[in-house]
Image (cartoon, rainbow, N blue to C red; front, side):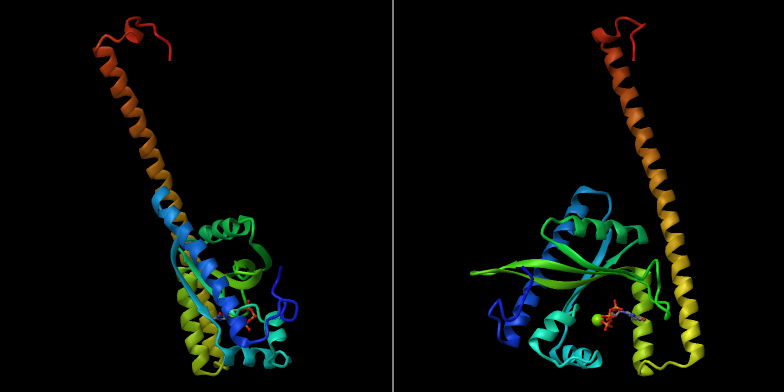
Length: 242
Ligand code: GTP
Ligand code: MG
């Protein structure tokens, strides 16, 4: 059940924030588990690192006012999707879609919004994959679902977004035209870099898979030769089939 202020008997800001904080912990733990699994089971981990944050009360109120809503508990729950926010930094663009898919497949997670700013970058040049997901939180008397905003991006996209954010902050969102243009150019460079790194990675992976296959083949030949030398019955007949 999605968080509803009146029906759930929630009547204070602290209670609402506890719910969102818990949902954030839930999501964080699930991602840490995935990260550890990748680390242990596979050759590489698509998750470089994870950051999470709770939006401050001031920031929630400012956002609501900016959108024409009174800052109330009801409005913050209904209109603010990023009270709990997680940012996952991946190595390659392909990792982003892989991870998004894994998250969506978790049975009790419901993805209610996707904004793919990689396929459709913002006018600023911003690229990232955004999802808003509802996560269940198990309390003593009830289970409440709360929204978590998940931003998934590559290291390069994160690098661009962090610097662009600082620059925009300096100019209070009104950076001069030539700076905005150059930032857009930087965004294109970042995308080229991501594409290059991805193709390099594919090449390296293919090479390493080829080496693995060759090593397995050599090992099989070595074992066969050993058995043959021992006069194993399979090898008594030279015409033996393989
Ligand atoms: P916000 O009111 O900013 O939360 O926007 P929104 O609710 O319409 O959601 P949107 O998916 O557009 O953006 C959410 C978040 O993405 C922002 O809070 C930033 O963290 C990030 N973001 C979006 N656009 C930009 C951008 O142009 N530059 C940078 N650096 N970050 C951006
Ligand atoms: Mg936001």
